[in-house]
Image 1 (cartoon, one colour):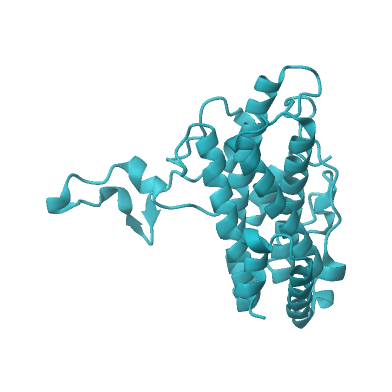
Image 2: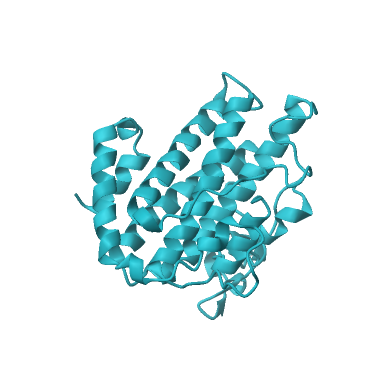
Length: 279
């Protein structure tokens, strides 16, 4: 089975419940993982599950294993967040929003299973998450702020998580380039995360893509690192904001130039964002 077929089994609604197909996929991915000689590569991110990891432990292994460990940790975070959100009843029931998050939740859970199976013994343990960030948020209405207010916080965090995931997967492409099959797998998950991000942003009344480093109204300052650098207009050494459409119209504005490109997050930036929610 090709990697394209493997990943399709996690993103195609018709195959979402095809347990046998997923088991076959896990076996195939595990086979590729074994070819990496994973056991001989330092984990690098093994301490990622501990929020208080020592500063001298560099969470930047720059290896396929490290890239997949980071991806798994982010998938753990998203999968638990959506599961708790659906269980809490904070998401309006019976409407489009609930259907969207039910489907996203299935995708994230499948991504976790896929990466755990592929990494095998090198899979990092699931961290303990605090989605309140020490009481700053209440996305599941645990303290009685009301479902409407809690749901807005849920949407804010969902946007931040999905936008982080898109940029984080992109940032790991260079660490996977030596393993084309694994890079293909990661990029196929990346495109699904991008669709999640676009849909969540639209649920908040925003464009489906990021303009500059704009986060949308109500986003707390703690989410700013998710968007730092997105205002970049230099692509391939060329300032795309200076492009002139000639006879087609005026020069492309900087806002359009920035939303035409997504910028990556490196490993350390991704770790710093995720650590805000790890106990």
